[in-house]
Image (cartoon, helix red, strand yellow):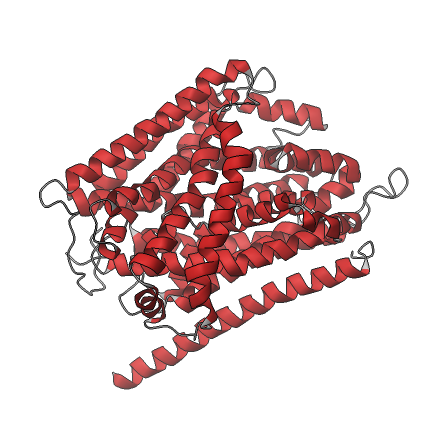
Length: 525
Length: 46
């Protein structure tokens, strides 16, 4: 049966942009910018965008489309087609591992956004109008201590709905599920984002008498006024590199999966750049114009700095609901905020499940529906671990190893395979095949030399500064230690199962199953 | 709105926003233009 294709380029771009645009665009980016030099953060940010994110994005699109020609929709098979060595397919397991682990905890956070959309409309959190009481509301929702909710049941119900929606979209396949959904969700997300940004612009100074210094203008100044001294600190450059990594979803194994459904000679250079630019529009223009400026207007600069230091969840799920209670039409604006986050989340999470679904279909002959059901049930079983032990830091543990550290490892691996093993000349031809734009030749040099060196520097710094202390659990509270080990056990188990699956799939010939792609518009859903 | 921004703050905002908006308009415009051309070409063939 013919391999499925995207129905239209616009659908592909929206799905890819939906994959890239996530909660981080609206929550992580403004916090990172505010904490790391304000306007000056944009210098390392855009440097990393050009030298790291854009080249990696093109590399992943190229690997994906190339692998798709051999009917591979996941990284193990893709790497094997580019590097004829027995180990290549096993190294490709990182692409399956990262997306599998991330989807396990990401869907849980995503379900909070759906829950809080509902709570905004029903005004469930109205009354929790201080930072502390709203923290307690969120904590009780997550099952961390007593508060508004008597049990974790509401969180569980929204998790079930979120998972059902994710796997319903996935069950419809690429063109009839993900593509159609992206065509609805991404424009809606952009619309909500633009409306919210315009609303923030109109807020001005909410309390001129008591707090004349608390204003949206101060918030913009907080984000954009540069602190040039910070540029001399390596942590700012690392933070910026980390942010562009997360924001474009590179190093996760998901861009490859989507790109594998691009037809053999269809453009990837312009389409890839368009998804990156849409993501940057959402992040730099919309993301930076909503949460931090409005927080400064309602909490002042000092408390906003504390909120930002507390992380993205405090900003999104605690400070914002407090603000919504103080403004006219707050329940509707709150709904818009959380539903915007939900759309940002779900368009990313469906992408995370796709590599696994493709792997089961291509290597074990599963039908699309069966592969989706098996992955859906497996993910659901694992999510329970996060829900039950959330208060013991298991999500943070998994996010660090799978969602942060491994991304750089995978990115380094794939850029080496692409530029040095597959060959830069061949890779450059693959990237430019069917291209609708002429990529400047300097990117050939950047992909071969600059990007790998940049990644090695990041990896070395991260190992030294974060990975070793995190591995040793230096700053972990003693009661969390056993649960964090359990989280590590779960990750190792997932990795082991995936490796065994690759071994089993390649047991007959030593290679993963492949076939040259039939070019057809028909799908196999 | 931007009254609290320093001169360099305004400069950074203008450069950052211009880069992002410029890139978005260029890429989206180019996609729409090439898709339109391709569709016209296909129609002629039919």
